[in-house]
Length: 401
Image 1 (cartoon, rainbow, N blue to C red):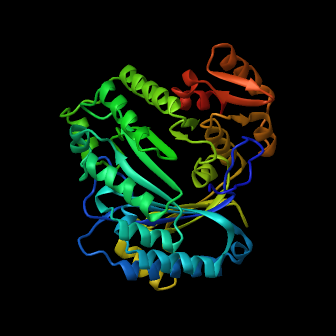
Image 2: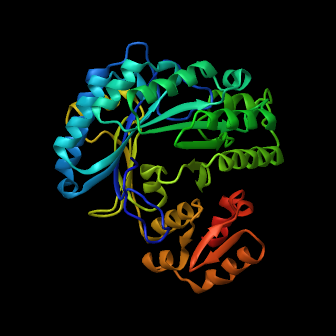
Image 3: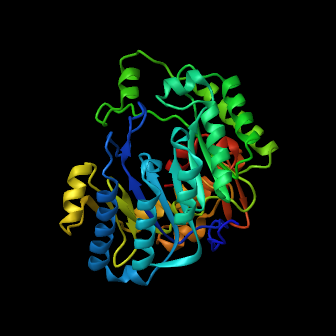
């Protein structure tokens, strides 16, 4: 059964209000498009890392004792490749979290897995540890696209992973896909979408490939090749067609779009991801993880991206942070409005303005203009982007902010 989350009043979206994100950084290889905090390792320090993240949690609770009174609605183990972590250590960490924090009944516990690391025994171990939502990083079924993305699995492995997840008793199986890849066609994206829905998942996330083109940014191997002119991504109108065909195929199969890049069967939207879109707060543990807490003062923090430096700091009882940023009303307003407009249900934009002390009247004309030109709808005070508006989400937000 899906987790029965509270509904956010400003968006109408079921969402966790307090969650925990745990980053497992280790991978056997790094994908060429990935800019996450990842450590390539053949020998993963599984037990040491489990102790370190619990040590970090102890340090955070000592520094901010008010956290102990909050109730966790969701836990998300992301990466990296969390399915490299032996189930006994996943169980150790989840049990350790439950011993230190209050956990809601029926808490949503998600774990990301790679299809090539799937087997019934491992998946059964995660399920026994308390994981109730498995998210598989599929990206594509097409051999050419998988090769372009540096992925090690094939379509047969994906189908085997879904079978293993069902055999292990996971009530929610989710899959992630990417479109807009160099060399990819609309027909291939449609074929991926049809093959995905045939596996009857509860949830599908499908993202347009984004590549950092800022010369000052940290490069990925893929962005370097694009800057050198060795590769070319599909043109924007083709990417829009890819997004359209994904929506059509998923919708026809009963997976309803509830966020720009996410579709789910009724009742199976991601409560943890909705936490980010609805202004909830979240602890973050592990290498490179980013957390946002609203008390005692709103702030965002990011952990060290070096796995070895993280381990040393966490084990020494020091907060393993790279940096910390205070969040004032303007920053919170910008994030709440922009994230709310990613949701198909939209957001009560006037209430958001009032909550964060931002003026309503100067924005009223712009809202009316967005509605008049077909970029948004306004119903019962809730502003929602149309498909046309969602395609230019960033530009719409810039005008409102």
